[in-house]
Image 1 (spheres, helix red, strand yellow):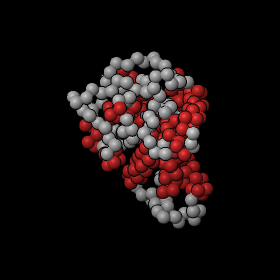
Image 2: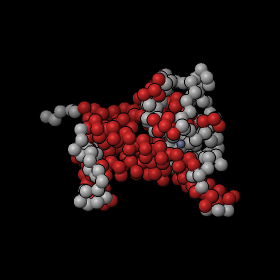
Image 3: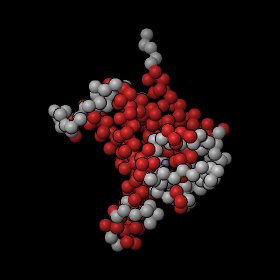
Image 4: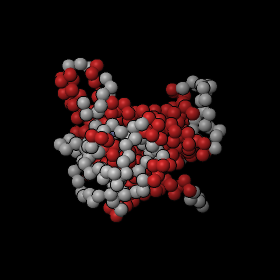
Length: 290
Ligand SMILES: [Zn+2]
Ligand SMILES: [Zn+2]
């Protein structure tokens, strides 16, 4: 008889739990009352299943499968085949907690860099703008990402995992944590802000990133841990006593349809090119609303 391990429980919650639990929690314990039914809800739910594809690959398979996929297949294709690159495979012999901390570090650096440039480079912004388009930020809006944007945010992280030879079990626990945190920080849950002192993000922190308030524009680029925003001075985190949490998000009039989302950035890029009459201008660092 096979026994159920802790990892099995995590896989089950990761796959079915967060997706259902967080939307319930954000209705009970909310920052502001928000409607459940809104424009784009069906598309965002479908986006969630697009995210599930990655989730099933890494968080709901098996440690051996993850290792074969990342540390064998990807490594052999992209990195020195003798495994002798600088620090290559160095995580393979480390305990799980070292792997986990390293994965958080790689994940945050990859996310912060991709996210920063997605806001500052007009060409990338048009793809990332899809994620920012929902006028209601809730747990379902978490997964609204253009395909190109998703690859840009995920690929460098997976490459680091493969190069450093992260263990399959650590990768699975990492994705379990990410599946929770990503959905949690987009939720409307009135969670405590003291976690910011521990460098852990929260709905309060990430909702400023999505807000239309000019003071918060191009701030809070971090994913789940906020140390890079603190380090580089890009954190915007006024206390609710100082300033009420944001109420307005996204872009009124932007499509809420996931099929349209895949084409819209190309159309907007064409319009931007026509306006600026220069390809170079699309790659010059500038604020996201310019
Ligand atoms: Zn963003
Ligand atoms: Zn977001």
